[in-house]
Image 1 (spheres, rainbow, N blue to C red):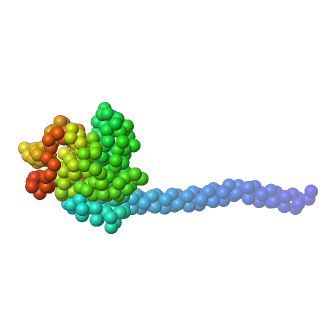
Image 2: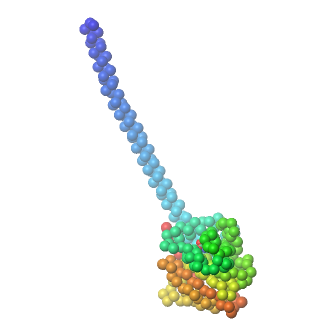
Image 3: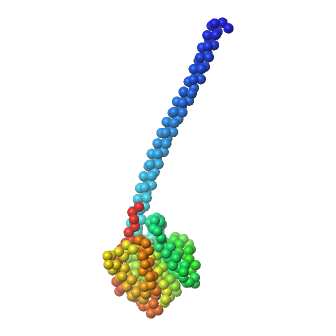
Length: 278
Ligand SMILES: C[S@@+](CC[C@H](N)C(=O)[O-])C[C@H]1O[C@@H](n2cnc3c(N)ncnc32)[C@H](O)[C@@H]1O
């Protein structure tokens, strides 16, 4: 090999080495660029996630205020007004129930669980009317036959009606359940209807949110109990269940009054049930 050839080969070798050295650098740059892209992507994702969290929170807030509005509407309407409102806009019912379920999820026990517990110790042959049944959970959870009534048939089998006009014969049931369903401003007419449906000796089981009766001296609660007694019931149980609701159980007297108008009794106005803001 001539000295010239040797120099050329050395040069070539150097160039190859140089290329080989540069390659990883280039790779590194590419990797860096890719990493930067990824980083940018993840911060974009983070931004997007942040946006969707804010949107989800806003949606939740809107749903919460809509639930509270609906709740107030149902408590300040009469039974027949509520029936009309929901008949014209049945989608409101679903909105109400989604909000209601979210509220009661956080309670140590739900009122419907108390009703289930109470019925589990009672005769299986009893006929029960669940007045304002919601999704009729009670009927699927007890041994007794349960007729379920509400403004909407959220599940098959629910009979749609205003619970002050229940399509059942007088003196045909053993138990009437009002589980947080004395919602109308004319709720007294619901109780009178339950009295019509109940056999003498039958049971009236009521769960209501404690704050609806809240007064320093319990006067609203005593007035309420007094009205129910006046239409022919005896109080058998008056119990606070935790801090959220109370259970009142009455038994229909054999000699209970057959006729009584809602207006003549002076049922106390119960407060609108206030649920927590979420
Ligand atoms: C707070 S929710 C409770 C539902 C169910 N009892 C429970 O404990 O899960 C009250 C229910 O009463 C029903 N309700 C209120 N007023 C009514 C009326 N006038 N006639 C029929 N149902 C009524 C509502 O539609 C709602 O489903």
